[in-house]
Amino acid sequence: MTRNEAWQLLCEFTQTDSLRKHALAVEAAMRHYATLLGGDPDLWGVTGLLHDFDYERWPEPPAHTREGAHILRERGVDTEIIEAILSHGEWNVPDYPRDRPIRKALFAVDELSGFIVACALVRPTRLEGLTPKSVKKKMKTPGFAAAVSRDDIHAGAALLEIELDEHISNCVAALQTVARELDLA
Image 1: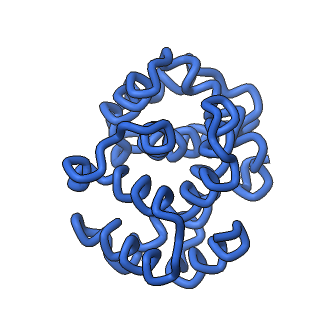
Image 2: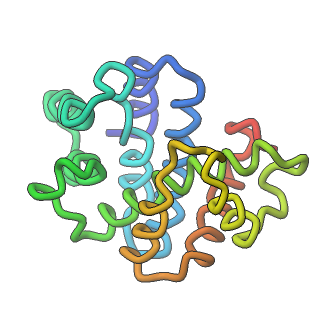
């Protein structure tokens, strides 16, 4: 599936601007990690772009991810993409373990990308100058972006076997490449 086809599919199933922006943020982070971990940036990018494409229609587990996987299989999407998307849902881990770089990266960047966007939105300079120290300070505030799992952010860095500061820096750098599309420029 090309990036353009993935974008069209995302827009077909996702009407919410914020969820489309989340997909763009995760796509950017996945492309960044593909270059760091020896993956295919296009394949990893499409995975990030589509990871939540079914969420508006099927927000509850296990339908979320599984309904999307069914649609992707019908459209002939690469199995690596489908299984990585399935692996980001905790309910699918027994069948789709996070045992490959693409699966680890998707889990690791999903929550953190959303949290970084939330941090940037409350800063006058947005992503510019956003540091790991600032992000970690916000993580200590339970009411800030309360829906974001801090445990998943920590677990993601551990899964990638990197320090949290480095993981945050990587994701901030990735999101800076799409700052205009995220309205964070």
